[in-house]
Length: 340
Ligand code: HPA
Ligand code: ZN
Image (cartoon, rainbow, N blue to C red; front, side, top):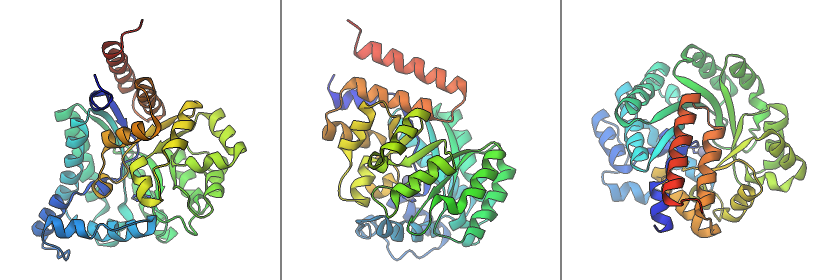
């Protein structure tokens, strides 16, 4: 079996995926028509022609306006279901997925339509695809703190539907510490905590320090700049804090995929995982991200398996889901690489 086929058939876990970043041009156009929203483009080619970005800020400038097409509870369900179908087709068995409610609420969409629409899809994915999923509410860090406070307060009513809280968007001037009170509140109410520390951003090491020391996050999204500070790297290793890396996305937001550093951290025992971030915009779902990393850093099958072990380990899945996944992974490993 060649390595690409091995990667395609590998049972997988996805931990860094923005649902709004899965909005493919075809669905964007369909939702625009359904809701009578003028997005300024009417063909897939025209939509794709707007996908010009070479930094986090230029990506976000395309990503946020597109969300205008999402209006009803059914729209959110349809978006998430389209993603879950793709993920299941790539053998993803468990996915923890971000959503950005502040942006929708600011447009007049009801908070519960967002959460319940996405949750409808979570239930459908379990029922129809055997895929387990959890929703992570992401604070959009460059919107006013008060808007984050509003959605976190609302989130507390949806403990059954939301598993954790995250922090995304433009990092400049928006350190994790700005939202420390909200992470504390969410944790107290039983939610898990993760924070984006994007690649090569301004003050990235200080943001990592705050995430690890001041907030004591459960995991970090991206975060590979941790190699620049041996003390923080040691802390990360000591705690077993995982990193959700996204090699294809990295090559859009910075000038390379950071494959060598991701592979180096993996080989040093850091709980590194590989994920897709915003696949509709960056052109790669989880399999393509694994293939890109495998090629760039010469990973072997044992390392691809280890990435999945790391992912289920740092996931917030139930014990049942974790055990079931590990059993499937062991069986896959034994089938394709029988022990000598
Ligand atoms: N980085 C930060 N914020 C985001 C991203 C990302 O890649 N995608 C969606 N929001
Ligand atoms: Zn992200």
